[in-house]
Image 1 (cartoon, helix red, strand yellow):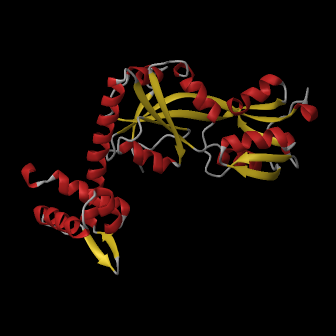
Image 2: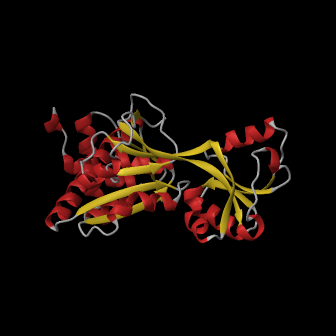
Image 3: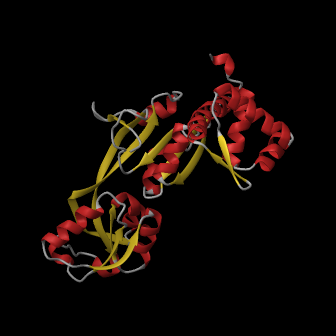
Amino acid sequence: MLERLNFRHLLYFWRVAKLGHLTRAATELHTSQSALSSQIRQLEDALGEALFTRTGRRLVLTDTGHLVLAYAENIFGLGQELLSRLQGRSEGIDRLRVGSVATLSRNYQENWIRALLRDPGIVLTLESGSREELLGRLMAHQLDVVLANEAVPAGPDQQLYCRLLGSQALSLVGQASQWEGQTLRFPQDLDGLELALPGPRHAARAHFDALCTSHGVRPRLRAEVDDMAMLRLIARDSGWLALLPAVVVQDELRTGLLVTVSEIAHLEERFYAITTTQRHHLERLDRLLAPKTPDAALPCSIP
């Protein structure tokens, strides 16, 4: 029965579980350690199972504790979202919280939100991190959308949706002072050339390596870079050729600092927007997510 669940007790449990320490949680909640312990014991009694075990001075979540924490994250994450939405509505503004994986081009992210940059009715929160971290925050309703360059595999357990926003062929780019007017065949002409490549976690990297191996080509690897902003700087300043989507260096290509020496049509980067099925619908976000093709929305879940 729902009346067995005291949400104040659940809140106290949530803060202790998140902070991992009774003293810090008691200070944050403006209560005593003994009162906090008593509230958590009452929650355990109501649920009929222990939520913590003690290891020395440490509190360690039990299996049931991990389960309850996952639900508490959703409950209080929704509460935080509610307060944020109401505050924004009272101020006549929308708040859009966008997470972007570290391997995604910041130029692509800016291009995607560009229509909102001069919109006085929107406040943007932009975060970056690992895919797992950002999806966790999305599921806890602390983000509205996650931008990624890799789809999340489909499955029944997590209510997430991947929306394919678009794709772009990868290119080899180099400094115009060295490569102006030159083109390279891929991968035949790469043997011995100095390259900066996306790191092994990048979706296209394994395909690139396989193509080089199948043609007996051995480029000279100078850098592996997961962060597209850093790969952009290396492409600009190193003198090495860099493999990346053109959007990463769109400004350098436009000004002529860098040039494309090979566009590789069969190597591409895809761009996805990941949302929860239970998200609060924001008109501005819905416009950004409007599918370009009928099949752009794909169900997905955390693997």
